[in-house]
Image 1 (tube, rainbow, N blue to C red):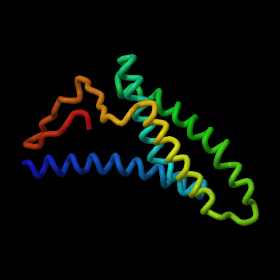
Image 2 (image 1 turned 30 degrees about the vertical axis):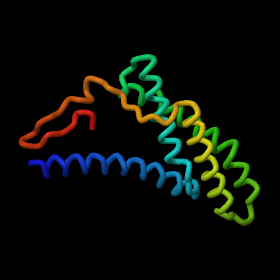
Image 3 (image 1 turned 60 degrees about the vertical axis):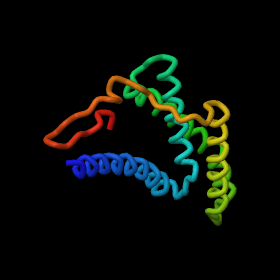
Length: 145
């Protein structure tokens, strides 16, 4: 039964990674931009959600509805003020290296900004769901997933 628990937990983590990859694929498919800052924006959204939870006590699942539009706006502003000017300068010939370097630089800026603001400590939101488990047959699942 440990194998089944590991299998189900692996599938749930794979689904989370799949959603992250879906976002990256949408950006590349629609805008033709390889966004190296995608992971940094994801990390920043999680840290913002954690600190809002810590100081306000709002349920982390409700924070998805708050942080998602906030990060959408942040991503839009990043595209509008950083990426779009680079793409506008390359109307005739689109060289992907300029946008690759820009998004890599944005990733570094976002990561170091988060490091300065939030610190380097590992944090986790402890809720009533965090330690709860669900037993289906002989498979034990974490309720948080």
